[in-house]
Length: 246
Picture (tube, rainbow, N blue to C red):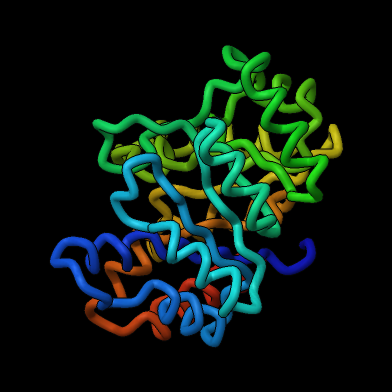
């Protein structure tokens, strides 16, 4: 169908478990190294304003100790921009962030925040950092990404992942169609489409089969599955399913 679909492993929730008790274990950097050995193509980490999981020290160590590209998820704030420009990770994905949410609950409103985002997109791009926007799969958000001249968008798959099965499969199919159409629209306009959020062994294949997608970013499920099978096995199984879809 297309070239190999990349797998970015998000290690945030290894840090969540560590921070629940304090101390140094489990170590998210060790998780990144294990994920790389199991077939991950990149590592994703979200440095949140409140440092609820990944910390500044984690970012320091990830930049120093892993060979895979680091995708830094960040809010569009001066603090996060300064950190990104200092570290210069391979990529920075601008995401929405609210203190009261448990995790990122939806896509960025790039269309409604275009003027605000332009400054951050330009500064990151000037530093040689690949910029992406985490957005909902709808045409209005793709059009905003085109105007902002970002090289990458990451389509939020949460609505698809959490859609309830019904006899006709209509809700899941509708969400999958939205993802397919927006991935095609992005690619047609020179933007590399990625996707992520809520993907599991059970629902990843239809998304992985979308030919325009270049990368999936998956974290919470892989960390949860690792409790039962180990991180190596969970990453390898996800890698297998993605490869089979292609």
